Length: 387
Image (cartoon, rainbow, N blue to C red):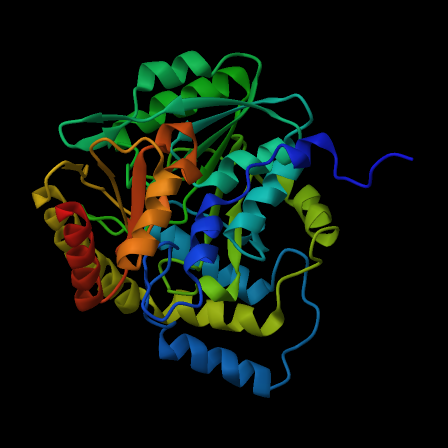
């Protein structure tokens, strides 16, 4: 009788090294955890209050597969104002988190054996979701230049061949903070049009940028409704709603009906009362988002500035997001180093190996924390290095 095991594609998936490190430190009261990507402040009160009232009002029923009409209208108004280009509600679908959005669009457009291109280092889910669907992955590594991460556009273009089914781009990038330059968008979009490649943008950090403007460069203002361009996003980061598990997709109108079917066979719909909280976030949240962006800019300067003063540490400057991605001279096993930091100085960081081979030797620090907490973590790391 055959062994009761999962199929080979699932067995080949990489277990989360972030979770492995977190499991090693969870339960210890002395740990300073910077390993996961979330703020140490709760969701703003106005979002929590709107959601609590929705629960009290009995909003606990099934909703439309694509999300409530009033939420899609609010999201349409938000995106249209943000990007200066009309994004109608007929192009929008609500998902049960940003990662669920990535899974849904992957299920809709990727078949077994398809070639999928991804830039890396990158959040592991972006790579592993296509692998679950038996896709062939080709990785284009980011590079470092002048103290920042950059994408070699020529290398990416070489990877986008006629047999490529999809390109996944995460910008601002988790873990590096790399942000796609605005001037590179047109060339990438044109190559995807030329070969019929799906361009799937993971835009979850688009509001968390450190340069001018309210949002990172987006493909949405450049793309026609008929283009094979999909934007996936989440309420998790910009509105401090990580535990709420709500996201969205911007899709070609021709894909909407199919996405609705795929949603039905995954989760049926997003929770009713949480969608009320999302409407509050979109309609009342700009001041809160701006405040978070200002906090993160200060935290970036604090953490990256201190890391660069430590001997043997390389810390490229992130252009967006909420992470410092750095390495300590001589480190070749980031998982072992992350566990050593837990054991010796009670400091919880994510190992770079969690983000693919291009991240090995590096560590990720989520700096979306109060200044005093970041300062204590930096002191612990400095003490570890002095030893």
